[in-house]
Amino acid sequence: MQKVYPTVSEALAGLLRDGMTIMSGGFGLCGIPQALIEGVRLSGVRDLTVISNNAGVDGIGLGTLLETRQVSKMISSYVGENKLFAEQYLSGELELEFNPQGTLAERIRAGGAGIPAFFTKTGVGTIIAEGKPVQEFDGEMYVMERRLVADISLVHAWQGDHEGNLVYRKTARNFNPMMATAGKVTIAEVEELVETGKIHPDHVHTPGIFVSRLVHVPEPVKHIEKRTTRPRVEETV
Image: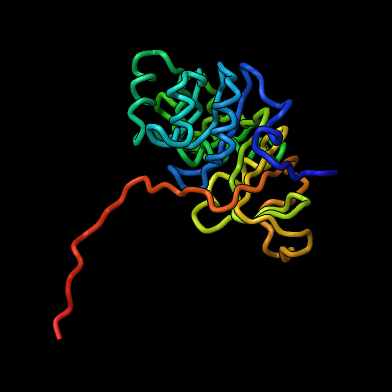
């Protein structure tokens, strides 16, 4: 089975449609599948439900899909750095399903593991628990959360081989690994594409069985969400 596609548009071909659910990896701007997100934008599909920790920042990452009004619902844990995200939510233009960050991660992991639901203490007694089953275990109350799965998952990896085995680098190993397991179809953009067998089995973070398609995106632009600097102190001899 040929998993490597020559372009982003070819990797996405036949998969995108209006009203679908997309998982998008990354945290802030770290490890986001920027090229694949741009491919979704250029396709023009609309009324999307996007599952992601946040929506990038204005004009970068998922922020570009908000600008074009292609997203109708976000399932996220953080609005923070994206002004347009907040504006669309507060105006009622964008539906938002808020999740505690750990709960969001576990809902995605459960989706990939075939677990339909689980109980957690996080959110008990708050609006997070409204309308959800609450049950006592060992004298403590827990709220039930449902798994999350997506029609497609878009992930960014540092390295991948022709069989779809993936390695993430440092902080980019955030939501990407679990999202790669929770999509009905997973598409990965990789910075380095190597021949099968070049990645040591112990170094594989996502086995290729979870990945349907890959596209090689060498030397991607890596945006800095917040740049903090301080004056350089000159040393005196």
